[in-house]
Image (cartoon, rainbow, N blue to C red):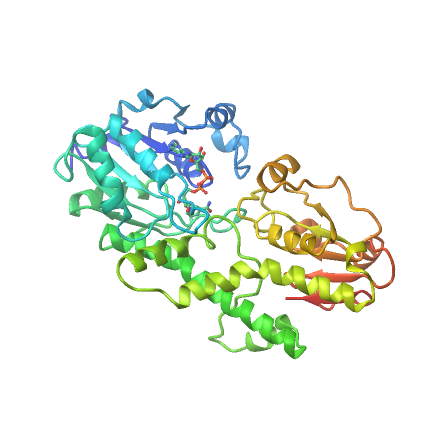
Length: 434
Ligand SMILES: NC(=O)c1ccc[n+]([C@@H]2O[C@H](COP(=O)([O-])OP(=O)(O)OC[C@H]3O[C@@H](n4cnc5c(N)ncnc54)[C@H](O)[C@@H]3O)[C@@H](O)[C@H]2O)c1
């Protein structure tokens, strides 16, 4: 192992590049850069310029996180010519038909292929279905480089478990799954990641096993939330509060603690579609996973409709109604609005001609406008028929019933608490939660 890639990286005789510097790529690049020489590559020049100025475009890291690191940021592929270890962390979204869009991943594979040399390593981190690395990415690497796998270069897969907005479960303190294409590559990849993951690594049996492990982590979560969302629809019909039920059932040692809610973002609500797509190709039409996706994807519309019903029940004309939606991001305490399901609540309300105001202390109004065609209002008014707290941002958790009541038009105001954070705290407004 004397001249292994690991030793060469540690002795700074070889460089590591991270391709795609988003939520996943930038933190890992900066961690590696504390130990070895790193090139941070991204196709987005604007983001590269921000990172050169020690600014994280994803707003997760501080300027101080960029200090004391051996890293250069670039959008020029030629700057990776002297790199021998590539980590790919580009997005793996779905298209309008909920099918995997491998465009960024195959694009990044082509980029890496252009500068790939004999003896180099490529490790993919993007979430994919089992088989994607070997069946989709490696052929692109081979074609772009003119090299042959596995004789000329090694490939591995190491999924990321980072959770946006979560300062407790970090890259350093969560075990990382790693895999390689043979024993030697697994050893080198494992040792390289051990440089930065304090909690250590789990050496998976194969690349496909590592791919599958990641995709089922998120699929399991999605299906579990879907069950609770479905229960919430049932309990609503039965006139019982789901959070009350969960609290009671949660006293049993093996009851799993999931809660109802919107499932947005680009992980939990997306990754299961990668698995169902692969299942379909393998001749199995997934039922449980797709049902879960259907239930979770419908929740925004369901919340919108329930709000309309509550307003109608007060005797008001729905066309004259005005609703405040609080929270636009896909989850609490983050600025990411991509694939936020709050937009489904709003479009359902608007389909009934309801006037909707939207606020969010974390989201950008410009981004909301360009992504969804609806901007944020600067501050809430005081003539709402209903208020929907859609996201449990920390700023909202601190609010009082008096503050909400002051924003209502009259004493028939409806308070919709999607995440149940104000349960037992709202006494005079008409309260409804999932
Ligand atoms: N965000 C998370 O919490 C999280 C957690 C675990 C796994 N993942 C997975 O990690 C992968 C990356 O996700 P992310 O959230 O970091 O994405 P992101 O959208 O935050 O960032 C991706 C970055 O890649 C760049 N990029 C796009 N195409 C590129 C290309 N061809 N070459 C170079 N750069 C390119 C973009 O400009 C952007 O800076 C996805 O597969 C995702 O499913 C994400």
